[in-house]
Amino acid sequence: MGRRTLKPTSDTPDLDTQLLLSEVLGQTRTWILTHPDVEFEGTQSQTFLRDLARCEAGEALPYVLGWWEFYGRRFQLTPEVLIPRPETELLIEEALLFLRTHPDRRMAVDIGTGCGCIAVNLAAEIPDLNIVATDIEVGALRIARNNACDHHVFSQMWFVQADLLSPLKASFDLICANLPYIPSEELVDLVVARREPRSALDGGEDGLQIIDRLMVQIPDLLAPRGRVLLEIGADQAEAVQTIVQNAIPASIVEVLQDLAGRDRLLMIDRRG
Image 1 (tube, rainbow, N blue to C red):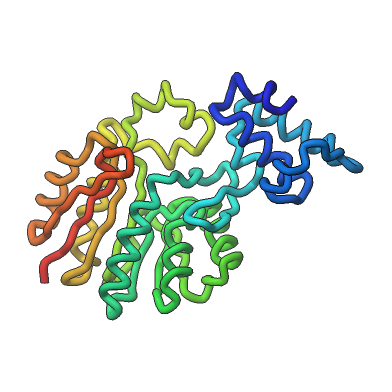
Image 2: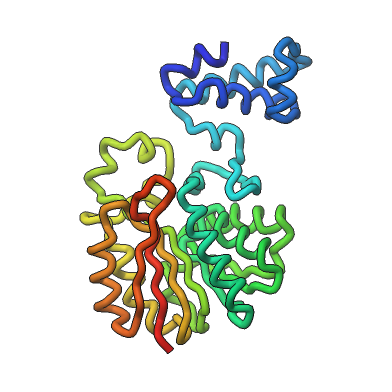
């Protein structure tokens, strides 16, 4: 029933149904697959039908579940924050490579942290890392705090309501940012803009307005030989490189591609 119900609105109706059942029954997805004839108990049937109806109506599955997995960890989610995407794992990998090869660099900031999936993963992987998580939305910071507690890294983190880096005064070895970069007019036709917070997607007229503002702030806060990792749209590399070169002339800029071969991450190294 679940598969038939979700097929018109989901590209993965089988997986979605399995995850809904797993949540309702309190079992793993593997258990669900090996027990196809399991019967509901008590109010489980009502809960499953309610959640199925929410998905059928167009609500994103992670919001119905209240969580989503990213980089092997489960993160609490609400419609106040963006759903983590697999392509953002490239940013995590590059951040960890930098931190592991520079053990003396242990001050980082995650700008626009959302649910905290970048900051929390970095703190969990690098136990002596100190990381500031900023977001303009109080609700997002509350969710990020919850996730930091869930993964036992709260003591490594500071949470600051901020418009990018504006109130901060520290010197950072590593600056991470997955900012809104979709042009405003493109959001009109995107399903994601109807399901997820527009403020986490809308990059302004050209998609680069927020990135442009960030680059103006970075020179005062990025340590010599520090690194910036910035997720970008697949067609934005050239334009963002120009912004960086104007804002941080003493820098080396490299564009990294995701697994699909699309430009995805801008790596900026500040010369000493």
